Length: 266
Image (cartoon, rainbow, N blue to C red; front, side):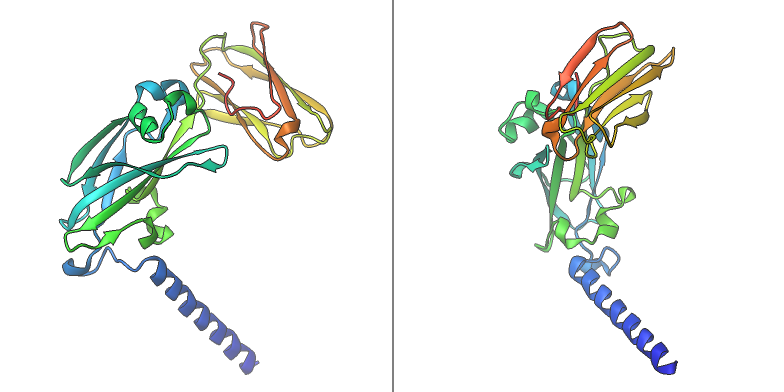
């Protein structure tokens, strides 16, 4: 038994050492060291991290950018778009050399930097922003310099890797209150393979899907007084098999959407 316990303790100690080494590799720069060795850390507070697809052409990335310490010479911001699992090239966007600073960049300008128009940015897309900080001592810091316990925490407000989600626009051309119907079809006859339609009623989201058979139908009661309804589609596997229609409380049939449905119906 003693040998077993010692073995377990030995394995645990090795695991701690390996983990520590991995964390050190991921986070070679420390935010809490002495003043002469702190990382040039930049924070950002973005006003809107979710933008409706219908508003993207008239919206801007608005944010406050600040340095944690007085050791940052510049911060460069680059951007890419993630759409349908495809990631675009990352391109430079702007450079800030004074802190704190107010950032305001129209999405039309961001789209132009990506070589597209805002009409090509749709619901379900992510606009990813990558920052690079250069310290007053010449130290260059990117997302790769920090471990996930820093860059993955919203309260850190880190300015090295963050996203803005493009969301489907709310329904604006139909009666909201009443019964909506989703009619789903799978061309192979084996359910929707992980895909689903989401009804978000005043911020409360419910997903609808089916996992067997060739078709399914759902009635969704949208209560009186609802101020916002967003309908979106999330893909699964075998997208070429998925088709659906939406019937509004007015009796209008929208669709068919699919095969390979888009994330938004409007």
